[in-house]
Length: 298
Image (cartoon, rainbow, N blue to C red; front, side, top):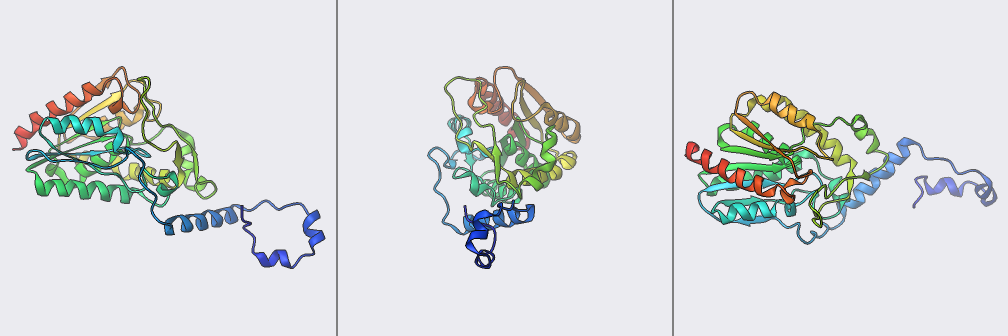
């Protein structure tokens, strides 16, 4: 590792003194500067290649469109079976790869929730240009982004389907994320929280802390505005989820007071339920939801 001290400081001291004196522990400010320098190097480097399976999903269908949005550190791979199911039913489907995802976890630390929302917003508006009716559906943070779209676009969103959406956390250490992100770039994370054996999620195994700090900002923006949603909402929540706590579900049910919200509990899946044992319940339930509300919207 390169020293965070200027080279001239070493040159001003005799070699024998440098060999015998105890190394000084870098201050928080110095570590922060070093992290910033590494981030500058990272963002100026060529973009990393997309991991196999993490590619965006686009399927042409009829005049009813569905935007699918994957979760924090995840990829469209977690949404692909869902998207293919809806496409086979004749719907037009779009699932973008959010900025900073599907490559290296380091790339995520150079992005913010505004970047992720902009990608979802752009995909939503492209669907609006092609389709008469558009639904938005998301997993985890993808659910948060779809709720935000419904807050912003009102009745232009025909309906919202979320799977284990995140709107906060009970983990007290989360409030330290902005400070920790200036000292360490990441912490170990949870990926492939799936009950079904032999199923893996294409996702980062680490939590990029700058990105996580921005996710907290997305929660702070989205949760207070849930009352602005007028579109019908169908939300699926896993009984056992090692990533998103039940409190997020309570925040959604308590905050979305201007629309109908139906919650369905998934008894046999963990967090990434779109790849888990209850995926059929999600897929068929969301298609029924679309067929019901597309008629009303049309």
